[in-house]
Figure 1 (tube, rainbow, N blue to C red):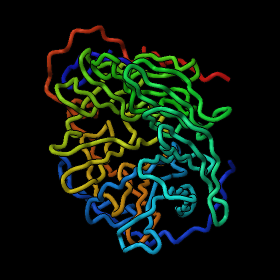
Figure 2: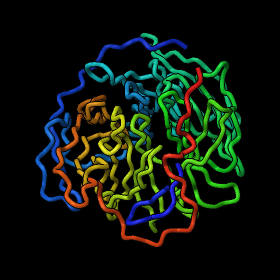
Figure 3: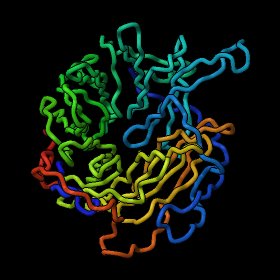
Length: 430
């Protein structure tokens, strides 16, 4: 997917498996109300009745981050407990924790090992319930799989990678593999650290400095990365085909000198959520992979003095990308809260987050229910439910899309229609 000129605010472009543990009481959550209407909203809305947690005030960011599998069945995080015998609040011991979210009630399983974890360790859940953990040991990064074994924690050591810096990528949709990036001065190493034949495996050295990481398919083959050239220059999203020896192709180019990053993608509908400064400053936009429609930058996604980032897209909307519900994390001076939006709508619905929300995490069901994991003082593991508010039919040009920024002079470049994106027509080999 490459795109070029901006017109009327739109760009034209052209180990062993885990055993279930006893489920703790998830608490007795109550409802939460919407914080208020967004820009261009006709009137305040009534509270959404499907919220399963009180949300009287914006939730604060929880670090280290909470990570969900691609299907939302499992989650994992580092959490802390007071050290036995220590002064109250003086010392804490960090350990991995796995959440099971696909059953009738969510529950958490602690996975402590013989010594506390460092806060810089990363965890990533797999589809079989095990949790991958990356630890820094001197100049090496070690990888292990953690899983519950009755009263204790089993650990399967996978191996180590000797690099100065290494970061896990988001969970692969195949639920088995895990990948990592090691960024150097001129190139970026791509590693498979779990799911391979034997331990961590170096797959390729990609030219430039790569970051991000968005999966474009459900097989875990097509990976989008934000690439900065080795000698400096604008950031552009590229696609890496793991089925073709990590072959790299351009994916997103809105203007020659703009920084264009892919934030989120839905493999079912092809909906892409993009951040770019092509309109003159950083804006959130959306497009459709394999479509000739323009990339748009809705005005309703601009919130003064707030950072807005998408974190979940409703799956299963085949051929209907404009109907996908999108959940966004909004960070402001008051904390973090939720934004709900559809490309076909004209407004951003702003809702209070449940208290203790693991900010930036959540998953949509196919029928449009947003599941938000949270842990507050009353419960250590729970999920709040939100539904997309009903929207009145948008007036205007009949397109159902929100007008964007004022027109600007289009840059001089050769547009490539979105329908001719290099990923179209590729199939996963047998």
